Length: 141
Image (cartoon, rainbow, N blue to C red; front, side, top):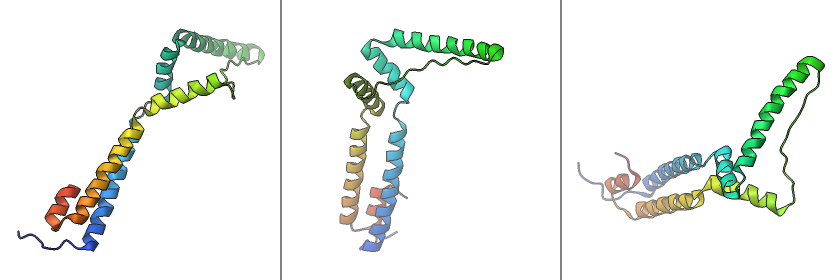
């Protein structure tokens, strides 16, 4: 099949839209790759040397739940055990920020790479002359 000599602005715009959809899908996939909160917290707890204390707290909380259920059945009272954050302290803020950074990992860099890759493809798309070249850049048959 012979190559088209001129690609045309309308086709380039349509293919640019297709590239945008590909980019958004790739970015969404990258965002799904972040750690869940509990896993990130476990890693940070190890860094801070509080893994054992946190596990002990979790075990005590579970046991208190069992006792609470028993007391509620027999006398209608509940027992609550909660871990609460002391807002406004530098230690608490530092801990929560560290969990956030561990969760995200290098997501920012990955998203920048994706942006750069698709910006380059768009520039190449505007510079190509044939539909075949454009299809190759966009990755369609």
